[in-house]
Image (tube, rainbow, N blue to C red; front, side, top):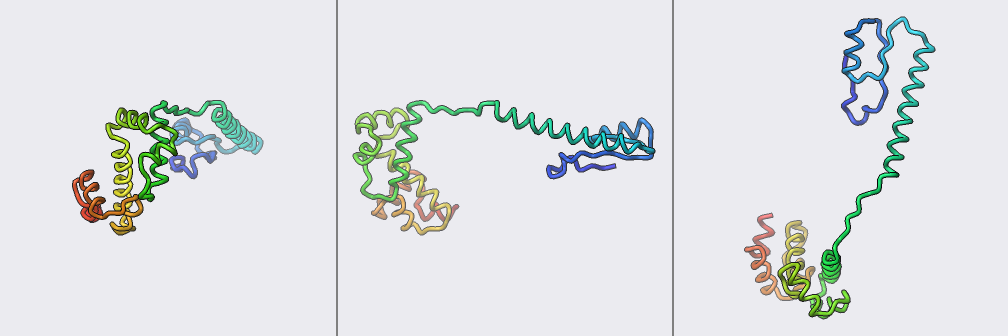
Length: 188
């Protein structure tokens, strides 16, 4: 005897074993194989239909209980600290303005609502980077992501992340990753 209770697609289908064998070992084997009901021959059709009805009701009851539990158990809430909220907001603004070569600290300050000095202190405290360094870091990391996709040339990536000078882009990238953008792209 073999059942497909281990396959996800068939695991919830109830199995009733109708057998001419009426011994304890066969019944025990059916239990070990996760057979839902064991009925030996000769069987009464009323018992078979009652057993089918019982299995269907049990399945419906379990499904209802699972749905109810899912509704009554509150979903975990991941609260962000004020520092995490600030960093997330600043990072999103930078990513939204990534391609703008004129995007700078003042523009970030204006869009985020944080004073430039307050933002500098917080970023330095949280990341160890100044605001200028943080913007550059986000740009360079995004450039690395684009380069590893190998869908764009180095020049295209440079413009996509807001750099307009090839040698400066290459220098910043090399400081962050220890290799030129082209070397990085070829190794990925």
